[in-house]
Length: 397
Ligand SMILES: Nc1ncnc2c1ncn2[C@@H]1O[C@H](COP(=O)(O)OP(=O)(O)OP(=O)(O)O)[C@@H](O)[C@H]1O
Ligand SMILES: [Mg+2]
Image (cartoon, rainbow, N blue to C red; front, side):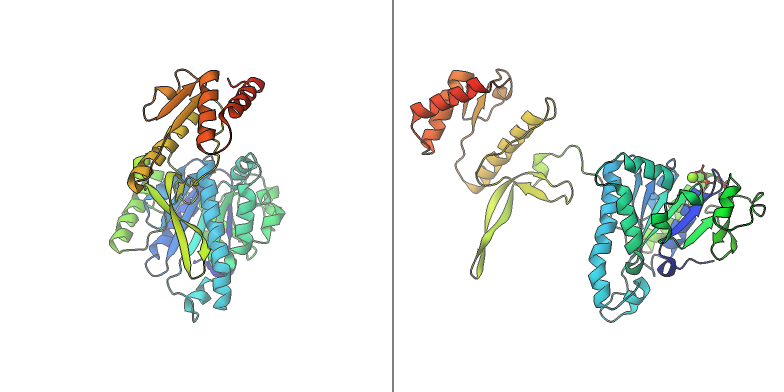
């Protein structure tokens, strides 16, 4: 049997424990990947059912396998799919294509536009985990992708332990449901299947709810062990690499540690357009955007605040900003003066690189007043008094 994703959009595979749901997903992933040279495909997976889908990671067609507990990666995967859906919508409409196949054939379309498929193992557990994520619920994002993905070649295949686990808001987007053996015979009534027919069904035996066809899922690796499936997936991965199949864009989490030296020193930032010639300024880079992985730069002027609880990295962030400024100033040959005002004896003061430091009430008031005066902001005595009264009315720990 083959699966026409353009027609059905999304697929559900329901069955009790051990009936072959995960194996069916692996079979589908392998079947889609094997065709990847002629029929480009990008696969992503969310695993809320024990980690077996990790075996798919070696495939060049697989861009990420996210454990459902990995909130960041799950978010990134769903965001990427939502972006693909949003980006393709107008493009497919322009080519007057109602699905991926017709877009590939259309004038103005593209024959190598990849099909994008999300495999979600353990829908129920995913939904429960997703509900703890709060505001931007991945569950809502999944629903949106399922409702609008079919016409732009983005599809979702989910597994669940019984058909009734699928909320009614999604059933319309799941015209094809494979039902493996179910524990509770009443669950068969839900899909209009004779409950006796499946009592003895072996793993991988399913009924396609709706059209009543009975099918047997093929098994990757020929026997049931996950190790055998993984070995066959690895062999396929090597074969696909050798045949030059297009790699799916990898989705990864932002690293928890990034060295400043790995980032560019400066970023050119547009500063408005004068007629005919856009102008840009160089700005010091101090980090990167965890969503886009693009460098971010400090503004040219103004007050910046680094806020957070003790131990969260405040001082380190301050030092990074100073180091970012220092290396930028050196490269740009600009003068730089770094003054530290602090109330902590043995904190940032111990670090070298400050041109001036002031510690404690008297020194801070004096140094602040001097700075304000040099910047043309007022008389030193008045500023000193203002700083003192600010310190006294809001003591800083
Ligand atoms: N299509 C198949 N043909 C033959 N045997 C299969 C098939 N699919 C699964 N099996 C057998 O059933 C076992 C369980 O399969 P699988 O882990 O895919 O089930 P599951 O429904 O995902 O289980 P769980 O609910 O525990 O996640 C496999 O180890 C394999 O031995
Ligand atoms: Mg499973």
